[in-house]
Structure formats: C-alpha cells, structure tokens
Image (cartoon, rainbow, N blue to C red; front, side):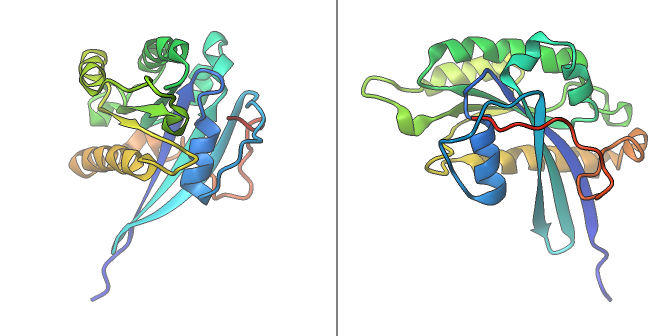
Length: 214
C-alpha cells in the first residue's frame, strides 16, 4: 500500500540589521551559492526551499528576507503575517549589530504569534551569529554568554554561521523545521492558515518589491 505524502508549507522570517548577511545565508541555503555582490534589500525579498524531509514528508519553506531598515517602519506587521518561525541574524565582526538582536526579537514577538490552535505563543526564533569566516584574531563568540542570552530572551538556540563557508546554516534550519513540525504534528494543521498563506509555488501569486541584500 502506497504511503500518502504529507506536504507542509512554512513561512520563515530572516531578519537583522543592515549588512548582517541575511540574503547571503538564504542564497547559500536555497541555491548553494555565495557572492559578495548583493545589493541591500529594499522592503522584502523571498525564496522557496523544497525539502524531502522524509519518505512521506515534504517541507516547503518560504524564506522572507526583511530589509535591515524595515524595523523602523510600519510594514513589518504585514511582512510577518502567517510566519511560523524566524532567524535573527547579526554580524560577529560588528558588535553594534548584536545590539539590534533584542529589538528585532521584541518586534517579532509583538507582531506575530503562533495560530491559536497551536497555543498562540511566540513563534520559535533561532539566533545566527553570522560571518564567522571574517573574524580576526581576538574576535570570538562567547558560547556561555550566548547560551544565557538566548535563554533570557526566548531564543530556541544559536548557531555561529558563515554563508561563505556554508557553516551551520543547514543545521540551524533543521532545528527550526523540527520544532515547527513537532508542533504541527501535535496540534494539526492550523485552520486559520488554510486560505491565508501566500503560496510561492503558485505562478499567479503576487510578489513583494524585491532587491538584493547582504
């Protein structure tokens, strides 16, 4: 007897201050490419990743690349709608971008929640300490401090990443997907999302204004 294939569609936000490498992470994860020539995102860009998660499970990820300056505008509430998870990215070589991490997390928590049938709590968020390949001598990520920071600020977990070297990006995505899948399998597909999600695999879907980003 043929096993029925289950397909899941998840919208994932990728946010962080300008120049932290959000688009580079997405391009590496989706297309396995890296370039230093991305232009800054204007508004929002997105990409689709289709994953054969198991013999009978297909996961489609909508990765929404939110421009670094958008936190200061009013459009993020629209961009965040229907998201079920997020990455917050900072640049390990620019400590000031870490200062924006808490603000981005608070912005997400205040504007998007899990569906009510899933308990309505905050969406799961993973912290990415990006551009590890550019660390100079003396620059390091304090694992103990980041563990404590994530625990105190509601992050699931953190990963030190590099889009250039393809470091830990797949692992970070796997952790986030596993979390969302576990909630879905426990509570079932949220009813309010059936007609509300934007399908990126639909040729007639309207896409937001696009740019590049780094």
